[in-house]
Image (cartoon, rainbow, N blue to C red):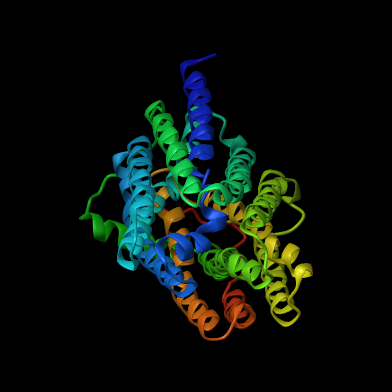
Length: 403
């Protein structure tokens, strides 16, 4: 085994450990009850905090991707893990709206730092070892591992909440701290390092312009996926008030959230088997139609039968997002890969920010049924417009140049 192969094996192993620990968010399925019972805040305040999260992601996503391309993947992941620990610790101590929102903002910085960087770290590691052909399978497996980690943590989080509402958050901090140790054991993969010939903001602006306007297929996929995944993000948070409306105990929140993430993990891990049978754009259109139908059904005909439908949002994310990443990775160089991937993630938050506020206000003034119908209407109209803007792919796809 060569040095590059040993290095790749260690990096893949450490990335898997980091993925599990960073996604072991025990408090996720009970965040809305936690805000209500511990901090004394309602669903509207939680959604406003999530909108602040998305707003900061919009501001940080591309700059942190640029930092990863220039400063290095490993250093960026180390800082991300440290900031994530700080964010959860701030939420543990929060007893007001401002403190809780500050914690969500800190977590946004952490997420923006590893968004795109983890995928670029894996691709560059495989590229250095001459194994880049494994990327689609390994990235799908990594996302599946992440979703399963969230699922297991959610399953336990609901139980822990019944014992003490603070325990799920404390367990989250412990696991994220273990993920920080895994980043320290990583090795920086060799890559074509980016050189900032202009100031950083001009460099990032030019990269963003190439991503959105320079290639029709990349721009179309980013726009359509942004609409779709902003809605599935909102569906995840809508599940908790939906369960409260049904009168369910918090222990079941964890069980059901875990089921959704397990399904999403399976969809991500085995989704590559459908490659070549349906195009990326075709898959995204089918997913969009499905999510619209789910929101309409759950909104107009509420009940326990709608729970599996709401959980399918995790399947759509697990199967869909890795397709978006793979399509982008084929069309950009290593020097700009994290920045372009961050652009795609950024657009999700651009759409999610107003969606979170509108849905939170709608649920607060009316009910969760009205909130789901709003989601269906916005995705149905906006997603259709986005799909119509996608131009046909050129016969010979272009590769985005290093700017």
